[in-house]
Image (tube, rainbow, N blue to C red; front, side):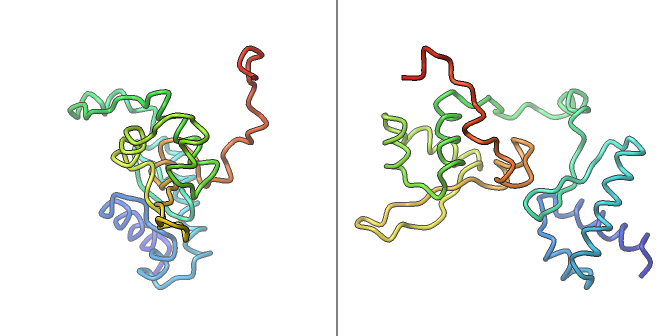
Length: 178
């Protein structure tokens, strides 16, 4: 296979799959090593950017996904019916931050940090797909462990959790420091 054919296959697979697909899976499908796949996909990413295409390939946690460019959002939004795309409440953002920085974490740990019941907000985050169950803790009652998802990374424009800002970098207003 020549490189153009490989690029076409990758483009077709990403388009057909819709969601992010792991590099291992692409490697298995194409029977090409991961480093070569990564190199080809990055070349495609550069090409789409250089040509100012309406689509792009994004990388999220060793997965690749074909999607539209964010700068064309307003045009695409006119095409589709608005889904219930409400922004997250402060309570949801607070809970999401607790989960992102402490995962895997139990609901009781989240509630201990927040100081309030988090059933409703946790259910909303699960419903939106930005949080998922990550198993159960080996402790009495076997509490559920929660963590963030690839959807969380995609929504916040992150490739990996290591790209989360350091907690020390946040400025806390003096009246909230207590």
